[in-house]
Length: 114
Image (cartoon, rainbow, N blue to C red; front, side, top):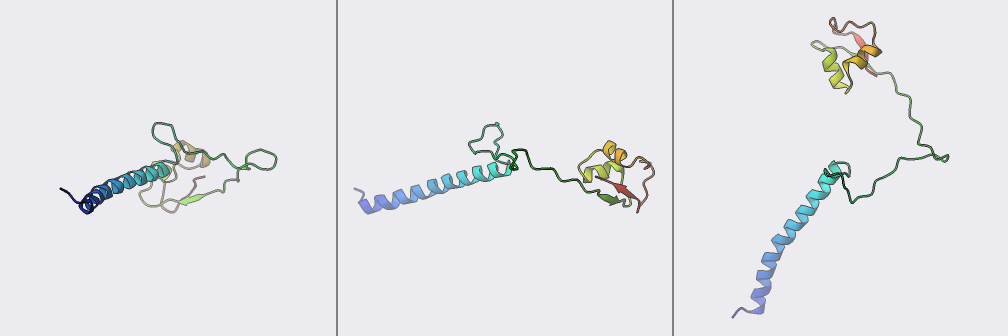
């Protein structure tokens, strides 16, 4: 016959890994949800979404005027590589820099990227 003390020891030995596994699973789900911006991959989320900030008149906050950003061309740069660095398109760069010849970039040349 098994003594009550032995039952408690065996119950603790079995319950501890189960509790650890459950806690680890919850932690992984919370971290994944945080990395996905609070949205699950299925499109349903049990977390509340935050609305954009509003001013006293009820309209959304005014957008800041974008500063002009200039990039100095390095050796080996192409408009495609520069566009990739700044998460934009070649067409957008050409629109910002109408006098730039995309086939004749030279190191040190300055181009507008935003």
